[in-house]
Picture 1 (tube, rainbow, N blue to C red):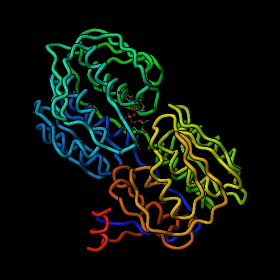
Picture 2 (picture 1 turned 90 degrees about the vertical axis):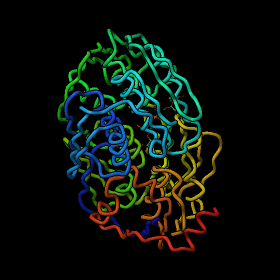
Picture 3 (picture 1 turned 120 degrees about the vertical axis):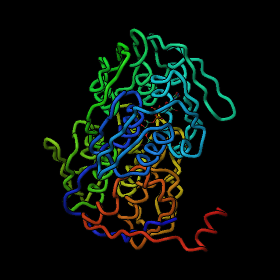
Picture 4 (picture 1 turned 180 degrees about the horizontal axis):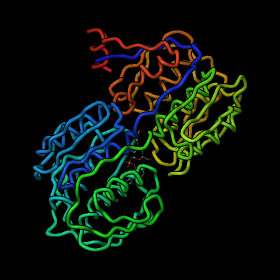
Length: 428
Ligand code: EPU
């Protein structure tokens, strides 16, 4: 196991290239199961979630070839095989294996998904969708069993706007008989990306990116080549870093429209943000103004940027309020930020941040992926050295984070945990 060390206080300057979107990649890889011939996915991020999903595909007889940021998936010899094992628990997105396997084989057995612990993360809407398509779904000893004689298109209203449920139902419905209509669908750009891949495979999907998605099922889907959209959350994290420490930071290979909510908040704080076709330029300001932020479904402020943004707000001149309406327990980073000198109170779904804190390097732990990002932001702003454990969470979702930060002039490196640190971690 490793820890990340950051010597804070160094300004950031230069250009950073954004990788392909994690939350697209983790749906596109399972989607390839649905094809009858090879699917090639370009612009993959170099993250452990991608590697885990490729391993899951191999467990069901798929062959995968990874070459730099391109993955070729051969689904021809895949078979329906129970997946109630350790790998499934490593990431939340293993739930997309349900929709894809149900679509292709009309059955699946899969362990309950893992991923970041952000409080309760039910999958009732996914199951509601599968059942509406004609599947029998049971939960036995921590595994979900799905089985259908045939899948028949249906009208499905989501009670909760859910990215995962929208994509999972799309995956099953493209191979169902007849028309499926998903109402109150999520509108995130990653949903459009998945719909684009499925359409290139021969699926008939209309309305992805709006709250009503219409799908005409087809019997066969073929292979294709698809390039993943840029990761808006990675780009947003670098925007926050640029706002915190940027002498001049250019973010390249980004879709500025995907980040309008963050851009608006940064401008409200007094940061100059300039947008070009696929680039965003920004630099820090001496006088950061406090702002209130509420996370919402897309195109609202993303919950995935709430944690790193909270770190930035510790440097504003005044009090800010951050409210997470998507996850009620996404505040595990706050105790760690307090260890570094931040003055933050959590009440219910909100954090009240008293700005102007003098952050000091400290030993902190990343409890989840974006908590890790928030500690990296804080570490770069703090005086002295910050040591972050729980790096495996960061590696799940940020592609080459250290080398990208080093390229901007950050002092960041990795070390192996000593026996003593490992023992301390076990006992904590
Ligand atoms: N929800 C339900 N029932 C369901 C599904 C969701 O009540 O059946 C609730 C959730 O508990 C949550 C809300 O609906 O309160 C939204 O959840 P959603 O299903 O949209 O989240 P997800 O699909 O599980 C994806 C991303 C998350 C991101 C959320 C929200 C992936 C693999 N994960 O999760 O990303 O926070 O959408 O935008 O796409 C991250 O990247 O760090 C991350 C956690």
